[in-house]
Image (cartoon, rainbow, N blue to C red; front, side):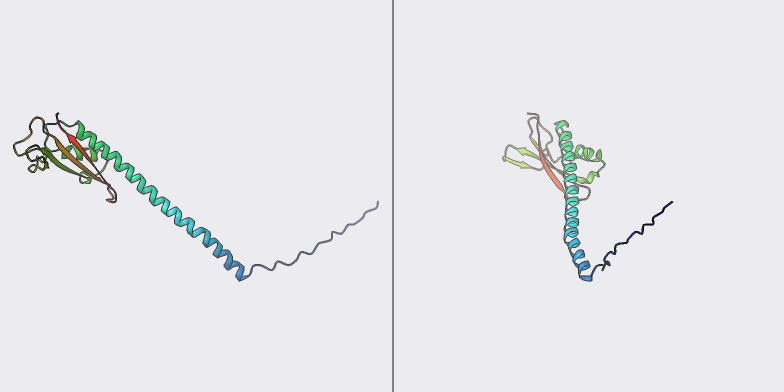
Length: 156
């Protein structure tokens, strides 16, 4: 038997000199140029998304409040309870809605506010063909977004 022995020749690799301080500083600077604006953009995106979600919630609540006012009886002179009930059903506080009441005075040709507790009616009370203007302002629970709408009520 004849055996040959092969010796593996090892190639010498050049020695790894490592990274210099300048290369490390440049790499960190490049990462900073890319990462910092990306994080800032993501933060702005989150803020915009949160604001959009709150605005959509406000619009939904405001539409529900206006709907309740529209469906309320026309013989009412104060629609605050209807508005507050609509806001509370969304889990918000009754103080998140402000209701303004006025009625149209045909004699003076102006919108007028009646007495407390019956602001959408004159002191003499509700009467046929009375036109009422109910201004609804809903503010988000975080108090950073507010929207308003006006609803006209009458039995005309």
